[in-house]
Image (cartoon, rainbow, N blue to C red):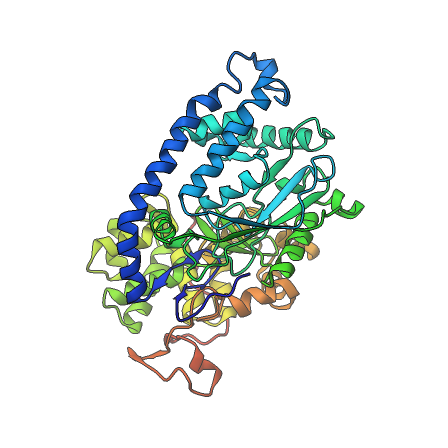
Length: 529
């Protein structure tokens, strides 16, 4: 990975999904001057190329039947005439945007040798430049993109695999289609995929999705480098927007890019049988070559997470944002404690654990309804929220309860039948509440809990404190300031900032006083949900 000059540009790397370009005053002024001249001209010329491509791309499949469209168009005038034109105009788009030269290292393998090109790191939509250097291979795209002017025509021209991510049947059809193409022994053209599945800041490689590795065929890893003084290209989940990325990139006199082809990776039999293992090994190889970590971070929906034993841990925990919002609204530690006490009382009352925004505000002692709405939005997609999730997740990161007492509270709240044991659904809901994010793959955890029969509170405590995987959950997540994505906050004592460099371990944690000892004493019996 390229090293950026710190005095010229730096960006936040709390986690791979954050990128904020920071410019000096001189760079900002220079960008404004050059941008006011270059950006309109470059964008106009790029749009002009797209408009010319639009009708030409439609000719590729024009007049063909559905059966003919389902086969690759690799011969005749539709290939030898249209393909070079679209390739030339595609390259012209990036030339006009300032990508005058593309340095190539290594050699691209043929389709029969490597049916798949796996490209990383994925930085932004500008990575599409790699398509021109790989002779416009087929890609996998969201079906929604088919309705976008020009883009839809180019996807049709390329005979791309389209998938509706919200439709399970569409995903299944896409998997079948991808496998058929990859094992066609050159009948279908080469495919290009970004196995990360989303854009990152390039400080690490996030977990590869298995799509490119499902067929168990050889892949050629392809690395993208942007060796520039200013890292303007990247557009991620948070930070610099795509408009800013485009503006800053077009404001440069030119932008360097290097496409590096690594040797073809041929999977072992074990990797062929396990696409996830195959994907992980290719990820590690590419990360090692780049000199950056290979991580288990993923983007689930719009939530950056990391994987841990089937659990999905949000890198931006809603509990920390909740605490921040409560403090911004003027609540002190004792008031936060009182609010959480009222919340647990409400969960155990006849009113139950569901609450709307208008109920949440007084429960939390908030003066601003908007703050309550923001907190509700962190945990729910509608106006109703599960108070158990707020209570348990905020308590887990605030230091309000010791872990044993926290787990006892959680078990009591989710033992729906008051039977002293949990079902698989109960375990999933309980873990989701503790980390503040829904959990859909807790089968591994439930299996571990059920070794001695129906999971009890003792089983849950034993597994979470002794199992090597879930011990990390406690040390890295259920401790104040313990989540890697968030810088440790300053300790607060009686509402005042403490010394963050003090010697004892507790000095590095934000704690809230709580009257109950960590003895796991029973809570009052709760009402049924």
